[in-house]
Length: 161
Image 1 (cartoon, rainbow, N blue to C red):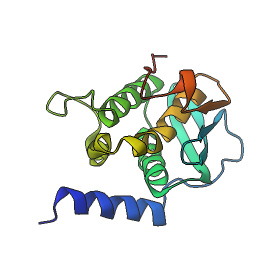
Image 2: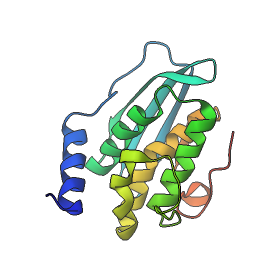
Image 3: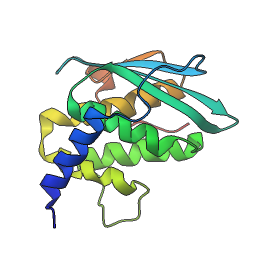
């Protein structure tokens, strides 16, 4: 059986090589650009709502493997979810990545828990969180966001819709 570190590496590499929902939507109702100045990641996240549900979502940009894998898994996880459910996933992912979520408690992360060990790599936390931070900005009609200063996801909380 594969150990957790090997599984993590395999999933990251798979989503980096073959990202899901990578590209551009013709006409997105929501869009944001996220930037992580620490490592240079720059990501566009866009989606369309059908009522209160995300029915289409895509991302693109230049980023490290962790950021791209996180974005790929994020888009798959939120497609078809309501905005309220997406906000819950954003907060839980952020809390997990920063070590504030006890995975023994009930949560909605499923396969996203593959990123749980990122909390042990402080310089990579913002890489994993950037797609989620950018999605949060788009949900709130903010066109751009950063992982620095007052927007530092490690230091602040997301709030809710």
